[in-house]
Amino acid sequence: MATEGRPVLLACATAGNVIVSVEVADYGTPTGYCGAYGRGTCTSGDTALQRIRERCVGQSTCELVVDEEWVGPDPCPGTGKALVLQWTCSDGPAPEPTPVVAPLPLSTSGRYIVDATGQRMKMAAVNWCTWPGASMEAAV
Image (cartoon, rainbow, N blue to C red):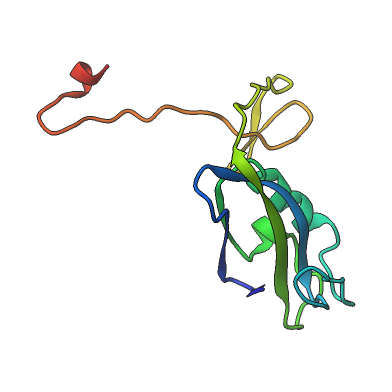
């Protein structure tokens, strides 16, 4: 359980395993305990669950902050809230992902890249690096 503004780390205990599902992610005044959480009278609904699933499933670790970007708008201003999470990790390494081509054209929305349907997307990238005594040209 984490409170507003606090960092949270979802992780798998065994190296090579990945998060395969997020069963519970509710921000508000949840009830219950691990394995038996319920929604309280103040809840983010499915917003937090959808956002955290999108970003964490398939990762070995997933760090988030309990804020509007991750859990959605404040469901009940002025009320103390917490985020409860429950997730499951794989029993082995993740399979190689199948590349997905986003519907074109791509555009930006604030700091996000979005596809033609308005969905945020992740892009693979390459970082250029050098080592002591090498130049960028030599590393290419």
